[in-house]
Length: 97
Image 1 (cartoon, helix red, strand yellow):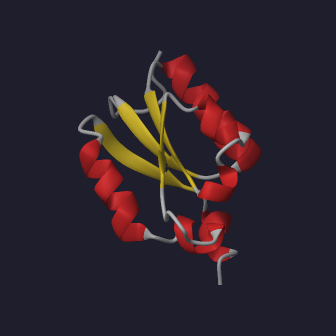
Image 2 (spheres, rainbow, N blue to C red):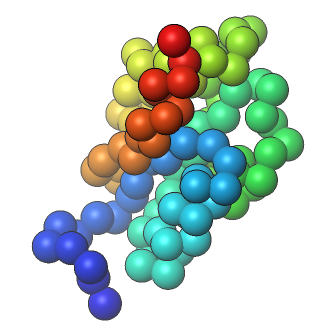
């Protein structure tokens, strides 16, 4: 069963913590491949473990700067040839002032 009119094959998740884990679970239930990003500080966190694939962003940067490294995130999106959209949690960006 699809819940939207767009047939999505792969989704990149730009979120951390419990919300990201819920998005990964929903993707799995809908048959959507999930790709996660993580900072070096989050290497062992649950949101990295639940993704079908995960990529390090902002190597050597603090987590806030790593997750705001938009050029690197877009580069990952291009590498993941199946990726069709990026889920970005608003607070992940708004709290990084």
